[in-house]
Image (tube, rainbow over all chains, first blue to last red; front, side):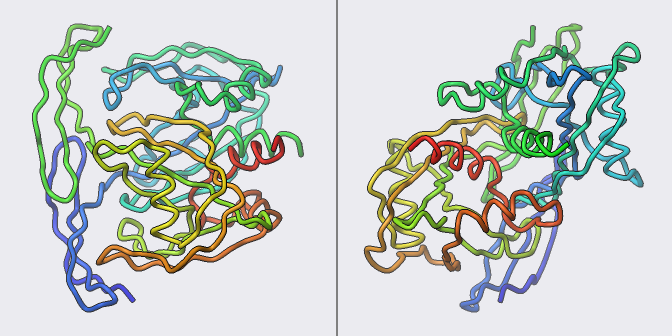
Length: 174
Length: 174
């Protein structure tokens, strides 16, 4: 059994690091730096023609452009499904007929949840409403092309692999 | 176009935060906290009976036990595929007949790569060799049971969804 003995803020900038101290099963104490962030949604959205709606955006971590589904932090007091609807509308201008919860997951060294949603029969309803400092473009891609990317070991630009597979598997059942 | 103007260390503990300053496409300057870590491998490993080899481990981020494939940091100078072989041997005692590169990916706010490998026909060759402070157990699970977990929206304990789908898709082709 692990027992938490202490927790303090190690770093506070645009992101926060919490230092959590645990008593390990062997009785020793160990500190872990945990990235502390809002939980967020990943929205695997598809048009009425079943094309994937993707975002192309420069990313400051790897310092290159990545292709992804819409993603964004859940606001305080907001339901995850509402965050999914809002992020899709803000980042792409699309609205979904139906939004379906697929799954949620944790990772080892963060305290956030990632929620996966499938958005179907999306229609373009207006212009994206981007935050200041947000620079992205959206594009659509056929499901065949998306599948091909997932299967190609050399393809490393699209980074929502889990969301894509969960959505494609669910779409078969719709 | 984003232009990097500055980079400095914002936090150095068990993890490191780099503060990267970019000139944005609108000419403004913005700082981003980037989690700076070693690249790592995720090893979707299967026994000769095609059972998935999984790790159960308490995780200090979400403060609960998660189920995952073997994962671990790539050592300096080590090839990703060697890290995959080593982590599998150390964490579980299994050795693979064949290790196949599936894909690699970046995420938006880290500077690391995640490499996905498929390890097939694994055989138990000895005891795990765990690092001090590493407390984990391994278990095997049928592919059917793994698929069922992936498809269940309420299942949120297994967190290597991308690796599982990439591996299952590849296994069909073996």
